[in-house]
Length: 271
Image 1 (tube, rainbow, N blue to C red):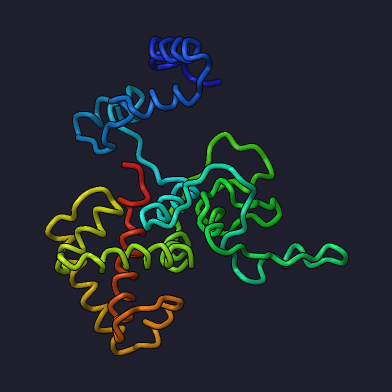
Image 2: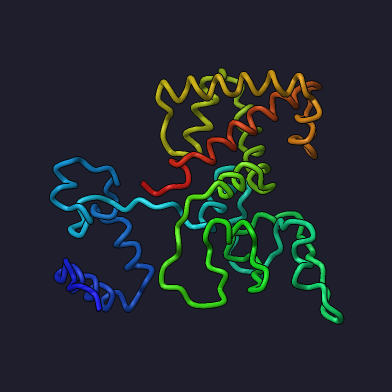
């Protein structure tokens, strides 16, 4: 029902490699993602676009938003919270209060969602307990399949609710706060150096002059706002003990700054 393969020789080569590697899919995936073709930038030029408008000849790399699980795991990894231990039972990370009971509040069937504590909150998304009738909301908002049917390809949408999720979800706030604490602990760096450190940690590149200026202005405005409204800073820093009194507005400002960087296209999009 589809067109003929555009690169039959390449398919033959990959099939041969798969057989010779004793059918190792891990080896095949590694070969593909480390190839020069896959590692191309998604940026294009008018001449390339005119020659290959649909990218059938693979003249540029793919550009797509990362999967829901990858976005969450990446945020936790960059903050240092991700538990990298492999294996173990399913875990119950953060979940909106009351939502679980919407489909579980029935006679002889009612069961509340018992959220885990400690390192179980920061296991990879692979280990998250998944109920088909009530999947993790943050996963479905980011287009993860609800697993009631097989899908050949995930949808990839761009909606305001996704930005609201990344800016307000408790897990992402806590991850941003963890990275903010590490950034503020770098005493030898000034504000510009801390901005560069946070930006590079999240995006794997340094900000340009315009980006640096915008982020410095943002963190300065945030610190002023939180000093004038300490209750807001207290809310963001809840559960954190700081040695110096009056440092919560500063930590809150840098937490929001890091969280804003988490929500950039460069962070959550494969370019």
